Length: 216
Image (cartoon, rainbow, N blue to C red; front, side, top):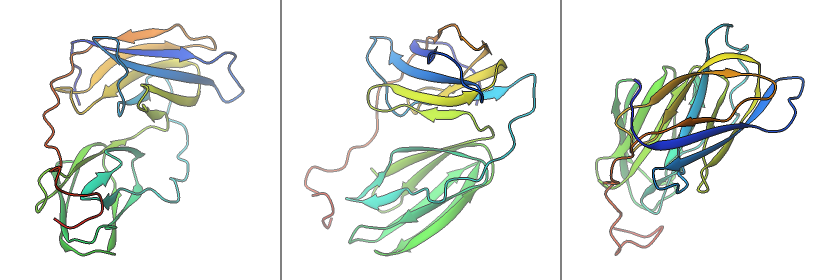
């Protein structure tokens, strides 16, 4: 995931006074038109201190198949996290990934089936369905405890960041590659801005004739 120049604005703002565990960073991601950007992933890699001790991953992370779509579109997890992939549709799927960070395949994935995948290497993993070409999801796997995904309003938060130097990285599915920049986090952090260009959204859309949760 290499750095890339363009036009997307990322602003990291310190949220008031820092608490004992570090600074809570409020995140806003905007495009070149100053519109909010959802499903952006931001993470911090420490440069002058070891990463914080590993914490237990969430007890349940899901990417479901429902209405012949994956949901959510973007999931961010720490290395070692197990993600469940339940099929809550009433049709079969063929779930797979050919991404370098994780390759797997579940052919003839029947309704009610719920396989799990351990994401054990950092990187971006694209999920697809060989039966329904428009089905797509992304798992961003990071080797750091400090990360966030933006909501539809372009907002997110990274909690409890200790002071120090970090490499801030930003990923979005419409970037040619992730964005990197060295930053300094203090108890009252200075706002930071990144400018990148988003590519046009060429994602294949689900056919309008398919009702959510219905048959193809």
